Length: 166
Image 1 (tube, helix red, strand yellow):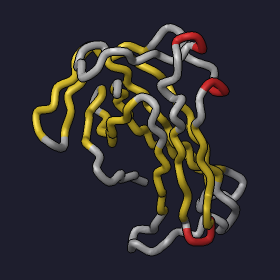
Image 2 (cartoon, one colour):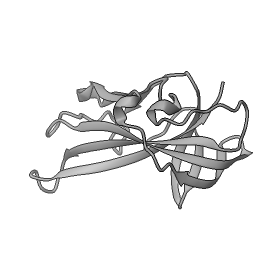
Image 3 (cartoon, rainbow, N blue to C red):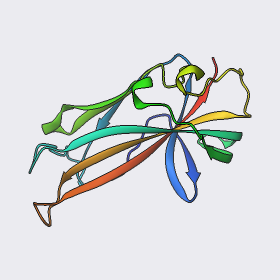
Image 4 (cartoon, one colour):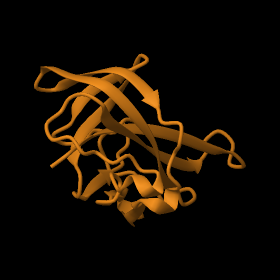
C-alpha cells in the first residue's frame, strides 16, 4: 500500500522514502484519502470485515533543511525529541467518510505546532532552515487477512510534515 499526497515532496530518512509536506504554525489541513486495489478500483473497506484506521505522531528536531530540487528535501541530523507531547495536546484525526468506496480523511489540527508549555515544539523563527521541527504522522490501517480470517494485516504509512513559522 502506498500513499501519495498532492503537492508533496519526497524525503528519505534512513533509507525509507516518504511523502513530505510543509505546514505553517497555526494552519490546519484535511487530507482526503482514497484506497484502491491493484487495478485502480475503489477498495471496499467494509469487506470482508471493517478496516480500522488510526493516526499517531512523533516530533523531531532537524538542524538543517535543504531543497536540492522542487520535489525533494534533504534533512540533516534528525533527532527524536526527548519529550514527546501527550496525544491529547494536539488534534490529529482520521476516519472513513465512505468505507464501502474506500474514502477517508486525515485531519492535522492547527495545534500540532502548539506551544512549548504542553510539550509540543514551539516554532519561533521565521524562514529559518535551522532547527526546524519535523512531525512524522503515521497512518495505521488494519484489515482482515485474506490468508487467515482470524488474523489482521496491519500497514503503517509514515508521512512527514516540516513545520515552519508563519
